[in-house]
Image (cartoon, rainbow, N blue to C red; front, side):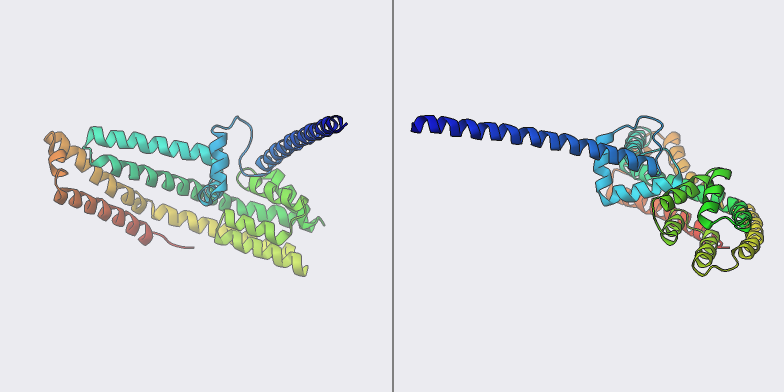
Length: 313
């Protein structure tokens, strides 16, 4: 009798374990499906388009969990590049490795790590250049944006509707950025938060003035039409002023890039005149220190020229 009871108890526990295991597997599968759906939704509402298959998905997920990956994702979103953080990171590593090998083979083994560091700096500078170029394009579209919103508000449309209309009529990057703002507003985000995120992605004085005008008008319900009309004229004048300043400083900007290029060219010239000269020069600590100091001075000269030629309008 006791044996029969023990068999029944064992069978009941086994059945209960199987039921719990099936329920656990079902919950796990549902969790994975919900997570995949959420990731797909975030990718569609984020800055990266999903028109093509993304490479390195596992590395991308790991990068996005880190602080560096999140900063890189925001920087890529500001540039408008169709790249994930993992794709950019792998491309940067490949560039660093290629420059390392080229520096060792063409100059001397000592220049391999320096060339790799140059690759990292070039990647960061490329992101900054792409971001600044996108900001400049957005600034050039601000007068037309203010004009469209002034016409829409004068016709009696709400500010949210005017933003959506401007997103449809304007080209990239203004159209894309306003589409993100309109989408966030449709999901229930506040006007202040969405416009503040816009200024964080594309920082500029012109955009700050426009956003401040819209936020104050939305809060106080002031004369938004007349404010946007006046702002349109001001933005047009600032646009012409920025174009003139950029033309005047184009030669100085080219000089800032020409100085380090001449230094690197001098190294190739020395190695070409006398084969093995760089190997002997970097074979001692004194020569290595001199090369490092020279590269540091070229970097300082590049930064100083860029800072001196920067004019805030």
